[in-house]
Length: 131
Image: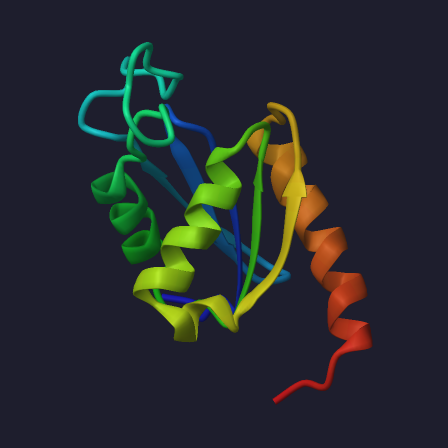
């Protein structure tokens, strides 16, 4: 297996697509929550924030799929990407240090997402010291 230093995550509340990649190849993983048809929405007459709880098991599976990647770009169309970052901050602060960026990205094809991530890291790698 080829070593992949970079990863891109595209996430919404229905699935997460994770690509581990380098300049030559990539590996694709898809993680789905146990019940993908449950929408996170405001609950009427609720005490507290009024928002349905985030699916922590789903975010945990996404973190597991990210693995040991050295640099991670997290993308997605809505709030799931920021919820994932909050989950990482609470449960795996060391991984948070490897998050290179968080960007809003609609619904790209796998090829477009990977091309975007390669371009992102090409620029980001030029601006950071390599270990």
